[in-house]
Amino acid sequence: MPPYFQLAQILEQKILSGELRPGDSLPSENQLGREYNLSRMTVRKCLSILAERGLISAHPGRGTFVSRPALDRAVFTIEEFHKEMSRRGLNPEARLLAVKVLKAPAEIGEKLGLEEGGRVMYFCRLLLAGDTPMALERKYMRFKKGSPILENELQYKAFSEVISMHSDVLPVRSRMILRPVLVGEEDGPLLQVPAGSPALCLEQYLYAADETVAGWGFFVFRGDRFSLVSEIRPLKEVE
Amino acid sequence: MPPYFQLAQILEQKILSGELRPGDSLPSENQLGREYNLSRMTVRKCLSILAERGLISAHPGRGTFVSRPALDRAVFTIEEFHKEMSRRGLNPEARLLAVKVLKAPAEIGEKLGLEEGGRVMYFCRLLLAGDTPMALERKYMRFKKGSPILENELQYKAFSEVISMHSDVLPVRSRMILRPVLVGEEDGPLLQVPAGSPALCLEQYLYAADETVAGWGFFVFRGDRFSLVSEIRPLKEVE
DNA sequence: GAGTGGTCTAGACCACCGT
DNA sequence: CGGTGGTCTAGACCACTCA
Image 1 (tube, chains in turn cyan, orange, brown, green):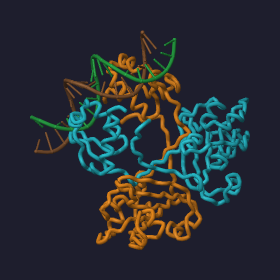
Image 2: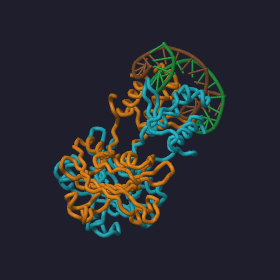
Image 3: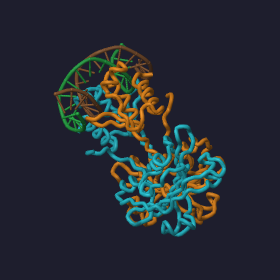
Image 4: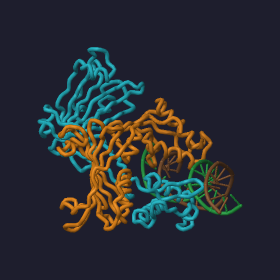
């Protein structure tokens, strides 16, 4: 365990235990270096960790101070589905329910920047944890003539990877929107919940380097099985 | 503009322009130091910035490589209500609908670690943007005898601040849970949406230094007015 | 064994702040 | 002015990887 990390833990402990309170000033970097027998650069490495996590903030010419924690702020992260479920200790699975090439509905053709009557590839997956349906995924991308539809890959790969492989467009940027929705008549039986149940809709836009939309679609997550948690975690001891 | 930042911009540009592609290896730290006439520590400071942003990742003994961007990952942030609305260019407002001291219902007493029949302070606020109701907030905290109830402050302060001021407990840690819900019969008229509409419930636990729960409660955000957005951008240019 | 990133040191100069 | 944090240097040792 490197010294800078140990010192970070010591200082974190003092802050979380209330020994150092919000607004208090920390000893100067030189002071800390003397106290703990570390060079100033090492002390700074340690402080930069605590600053990143929002526990302290440094002010040139004045000193370093304990921050008031942002307790009324929340940060939620959603990983790619397989990682997300593994993180939660669940066994992720996916069932490919549909793959089609179809004339783009107006709304979707517009999003993807296609002309009237352009063709899109569509797929739909049921995402499970163990045997429990967790989410439904419906995605659309430009259809590339002659490109083979590889069901095996469609079952396991994330949307951005499917696009990279199927088309010759490389997505470089994404935009996701999270909102609450009601489970639709069609989706209820698939998710094994009554229509009208609360759910989370995670809409996804993937953009190519030229700012065109390479893919669009959404997930519908069961509200009774999927929620998001935001927590402040202590520094780990082992890693 | 410090040298480490300039170099970060140069490398960032090479990655975004495709001169350096995902999977490519960067020159070694010593190599970069020679090329740009910088010490190794300065080069490392620069690389740590790019690594933080997820553009590169370092592997001991092997080298530093350009990362594939995490396009199927989303990060959502909810600020304290007034900041959140200001960020969205809206005028935040709050109306205090109720303040009460009451015997803790079993469920809430348990959360707050109170004995049977302990008293809690409860308040309810309607949060608006302009004249549009955005969310309803219902919060519970331990009741401190003799503490004055300051309606003015209850109207403007975030929950953690209310607790800091009203009680002598200092919240130091928070846990928030986000889930989709249906608007209840009671809340519908207040939020000016039909009961059964989709909404987001943001549950909040505030912990004191001794790990006891200092406050608990939740927000209910209108689903038709409030959604969360996550964007992964190629990068910033200046600043 | 040569090269890599991870860590650490003991200096240094600067802009900034308070007195 | 002296002290603060922000930046930088030119060395050093280590564990690791790869040929």
